[in-house]
Length: 100
Image (cartoon, rainbow, N blue to C red; front, side, top):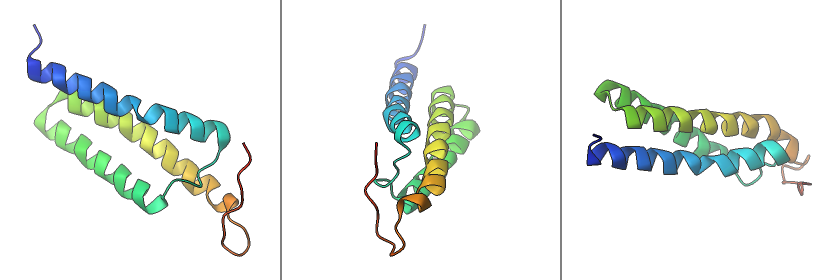
């Protein structure tokens, strides 16, 4: 039988990882990354990688699953920000209106 702490861990893992799916899907679909901060997402992605390493060191499966899944989504969005973010700026550095 599963421990309560494991059930909480898996519930948290499911909720936090699932929260990234809509953002990643919208970004893939529209290629609009204008509302995403490159600096924040870079630091966040690094933080998730460190949480994954921490989960691996502890041998905590819920942490490993949640953070590896979240890391995939975060990296995907970060790559799209790097790829499409430059295209969404005008010559004067201002953001152009994105078309959906």
